Length: 513
Image 1 (cartoon, one colour):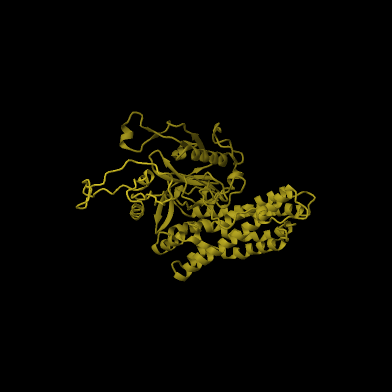
Image 2: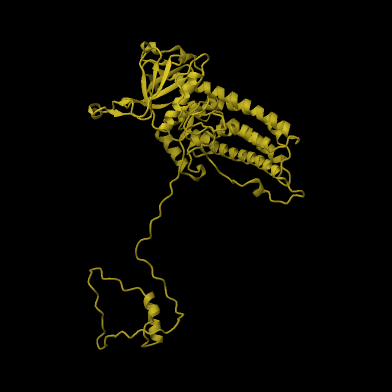
């Protein structure tokens, strides 16, 4: 800037400064000492007297822009979200809950989800965006939608194969090489995941071979009908997920495993997702097949040669998923039954050992503010305290379990129950009042004590009330546990059984099985 002014003065001596130039010229920097600089005059030279400003018209001299001497503004960093599994496994409303349910306000399947963040990668383009070749005969809207479903099925298989291969190459094999986990622990955590990769590669290759030059697939029903029986291999994988999640969470506390998983999550290949997000992918994919087939059948005309095979394939997929769901529920129920600790043998209620289904389980608080873990088994409600013995998590039974044929449920309005959480509250007039509370008690009070339980919010309270009512009222020959209130959720045990274990996010106050 200073060089430009010197050149201008030499070319036009005695020229008055242009007002535009004056505006574009930065003012001299202030002295660091705070004193005003004096104009320096060379000996023998008269001080320069400012001349009146004149408009000399437009000039073409380029002037450098004035730069701010202050630091650039700081940008707000974006937060990257990642899910812990929780989720447990969860279905969407239409999907079915698989493997031990956890009711977390979201369904099974990608949800996911939820915050749930599900691993995604690759392109999300539609079939119409991928294959834009003009066809000799334009397709009708229904056929376009049918091709979109087939394309979604194909790309989903492609992404699943990619992610399962990633888990094998970037997690299983390095952990095996580094020997940070034993072979038994690796088999417990990863299960039969290695057997699922060729299964989905087979379906992907068949669908790709069936694709014609214009991108259309004329018939997919027979392909699916021949491939779906292989999904029965999912039974062992899904039944193992409850124990796998518990072991993985335990091993992450060890420095070698924790550091390895942290470095993997910070790497680009993991898309900032936790290992459990990838291990839960097969389960969430499994419950999608009945939904995709139902959608594909909806866009297939009854006279289409693919309609009958698709109808048969949809029925088969529902039967397979239902069977796996039942076996997984039994495996989850057995897993938690084995981890119950009985301080008194009288607490071993026969209904607990007879139960083959775990309706729901999760954390609640009593009127003393103590956190309790509550299990609603098929024939008994059990209130427990979390304990640790020899680095293994267990659940110590608290008071006497309530058989469902003796259980009475009371929905407590906000403020009706009194809390005894502090000395201050005990001496305050009326004491502290509880919100989102309910009471479970024996039909015959002499058999055991009642429990006043408090949920974290109104939504989770309604989940518990609905699940308990349906578990009690669904027993043959049983009168309702309590009159269903107007705000009671309208859901049945069938949809609840389609929910799943939470493992993709942080634990929620309630897990419905």
